[in-house]
Amino acid sequence: MSRASLLRRAPGHARLLLFVLLALAAPALASCGSGSGPPTRVGGVAVDVVFGEPPDAVVADVDIAAAMGAEALRVSVQWSTFEIAKGRYAGYYLDGLDTLFRRARESGLRVLLTPVTTPCWAVATPGPDGTTGCGTPERSAQTARLPPTRSGDYADFLAFLARRYRDTLMGIEVWNEPNLRGTWDTPDPAAAYARLLKAVYPAVKRAAPSVPVVAGALAGAGVTGTFLDDLYAAGIDGHFDVLSVHAYNDGRAPDTLVDPALAQTTVLQGLRRLRETLDRHDERRPVWVTEIGWNTSTQRGQPFLDGVTEAQQARYLRRALELLRSPGGDIGFPEAVFVYRLRDVGADPAVPDQNYGLITKARRAKPALAAVRAAFGGKD
Image (cartoon, rainbow, N blue to C red; front, side, top):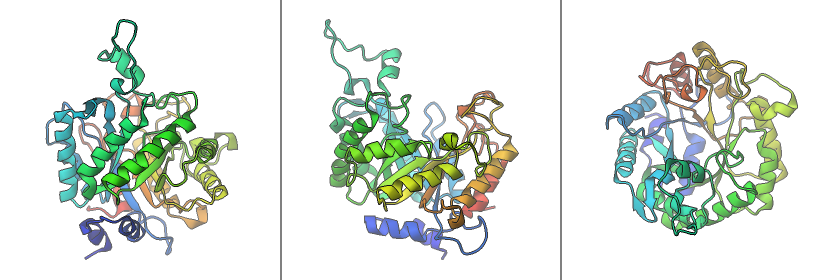
């Protein structure tokens, strides 16, 4: 039996066992590069529960991820939609997520959950007329990116998820890209995020002690330097198990060098700068790259959103996975990498966000699927 097969069959209840498995995991990235290299990494891919599609759609996506050789899935959870009132959960959302976890468990995959978007009830205060305005699309869009008034409300939600899915969880990632105003809108984002971590960590550990709490999900590896310094100053040490970061390179190859002022938009320079920041804080906890990818839209000439051809997407992902394994490139330290994403979320070729998939929305394989499958050691 291969080491990857052993990993997929392990129950993984203890945190120590989880990280031993991470160190031994194979064949993720095993065919990348040459030479012995560092220990192989866990390879994953982002998959979502898409409502409005047939019930077996998420099963089909999980099956494609498993055949591709992924060992883990990263799944966003919309807190604002899931918990319709304090302690009341939408049945259709539970059913969809249960289906995904059931298929993941059957396929030997672990799941990294990323709960995002604040429900209106968790931030709303009544106006003079006694109403909050909750229930309107405009109000929901406004409150989704705000920190909850009580960090404990978000912590309780994550504890619920940890209890329900503990045996299949690779971890729970606290929010997404809190260093961007578009997803975490508050005057002092680092302090607000630190408060969230301090509430989440004990709540998740009480619910499921072996489930790692993943902090960060930071946008742009290089841009995290100041924000990370602010997080440490706000006292996050001791309130997370893993740090996560998103490494993008706009429409460039992953090892293309740019002006240092733009390093946050790169893979190679950005992750090197991240390592420097972590070393300043003597940080030795694991680092996961929970998003990396290129979109195949027709968009050109717009910074941070440029598309690439499908052939370039495949070539860049292959090279990026090599770099993430290479000690010579100084970025072989991430212990897990999640490609963003398995399937396009739309079919408009002009919209970058709709075209990051390894397959199209209709499940036509792009060349990148074969490239990542080769890196992850999946089935031909």
